[in-house]
Amino acid sequence: MRHVKTIKLLALDVDGVLTDGVIYYGPSGDALKGFSARDGMGITLARMAGLKTAVITGRRSPMVEQRAKDLHIDYVVQEVQNKLTALQQICADLGISLSDVCYMGDDLNDLPLIQSVGFSAAPLDACEEVRQEAAFVSAFRGGHGALRELVEYILKNQNVWETILQHFQSGQAEYKQ
Image (cartoon, rainbow, N blue to C red; front, side, top):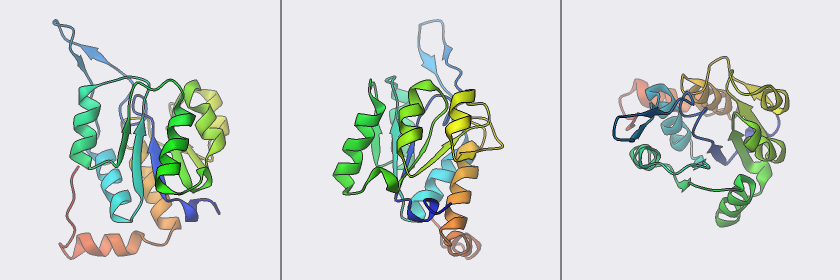
């Protein structure tokens, strides 16, 4: 838990973390993905607490670009072969180390990041190898509140949850889901 208190960047995989991992194709070949509003609120809460946010994915998707824009995600890296190299570049840009990062992933291509960051997390339905390596395994599946649960865990351990909660109770919070 000591690394949770120093997290400065929340980095995420997309398929299987922000979505349930299912990709729908329409008759014209258009791909569709569904995103959880609860997980969107999780990103908003992380940003309210001062955490930087990033998504790193091996696929390219206009839906991911739009969702990231709607949520004001700081870094969006798509169609990347080596996710660890991409995360190292983001850390260099921010002037932080991998130990300052929380990464949530769900599959084998996420293992190098899960094993390299200060705090790692996985949705309930992540592959067994990722769940075994992750410091935090959500009670929820990817795309169904796993990220929101992780963010609340981080913010409570960083002792900022009550302050954020007060902003919402007073009606002062501005947010997007």
